[in-house]
Amino acid sequence: MHQDFSKESLERITTGGLIGSRIHFFETIDSTNSHADVLATHGAREGEVVVADRQTAGRGRLRGRVWHSPPGRNLYTSVILRPPIPPAFATGLVFVAGVAVAELLNGYCPVALKWPNDVLAGGRKISGILTEMRSKGPEVEFVVVGIGINVNMEPDDFQEDLRPLSTSLREETSREVSRLDLTAGLYRLLEQWYRIFLRDGLAPVRDRWLEYSGMAGQMVEVTDGTVRHRGRCQGIDDEGILLLLDEHHRNISIRFGDVTIQKDG
Amino acid sequence: MEEVLAPMPGNILEVIVKVGDAVKEDDELVILEAMKMENPICSPVDGTVKEIKVKAKDVVEADQLLVVIE
Image 1 (cartoon, one colour):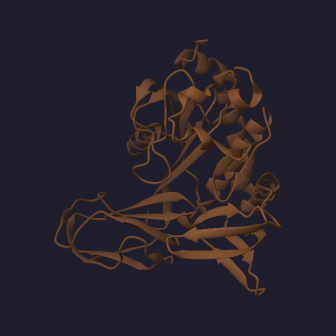
Image 2: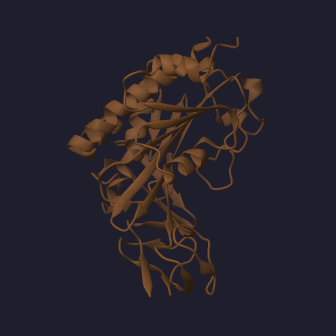
């Protein structure tokens, strides 16, 4: 059950690429994103990654919500990027990460993307992406792309309240999945899509993202606090903004909020 | 006097400082979020927080004034 998942084994399978060019491995860490942020603040180079076997305070997207991170089961990694782009364009990296993870996991089981950064299998969450940026004036200093993937979690491993909402590759495929292979694939795909994004902008990433989302043409509801919008999804634009057409045929541009696909749509 | 502007459109997740707080360069002032990407906005200088122009959940445009440091 317990496969070799260590700095040495990770270094063996990630030779040559930009992402994973230096691996900071921890048996246990509070949060890979927090550590990557500290490393990048102190000058870590683009492509350096933090990997942990276990997180004690892995952060979910909502501040203070903890990503459940037991040892020996999952993949927790944070990647440091230093894209030469203005801060307003850096949000494209949320979609870059989503497409990379979706392509990776789709090699194991069918997955779907939900705007802007959820990765679902069978309607349940299989991966979490938390992207953070530091900018100074008009420039991005660095971006940390944190990715957690439920790999070999079994139903009993999940906290009871998360069990109906979460799944893992093992649950979906009924077999144990190599975290080493998964990590190597993740870094390769992330690098591939990152280079496409830097060279060609968000458009090709967006097109791929839409293929995986299945949202285009669906009725969706978006809630942001007390504000609620409902409309048919027309896709996303080049900045990642969600485009809806409401029942009065008005165009609505959504920058924030939680999206639900309406089953009766 | 340093005006701290939003580097991108987004919403304010959290305001970390209060008026009158002493801050150092690179201390976090405000957390901005766009497309679920968190962007801590840091002080460009050592100084004191003179004005805070936003509160949590506010929606801001690029280049909107967030905080004044003196």
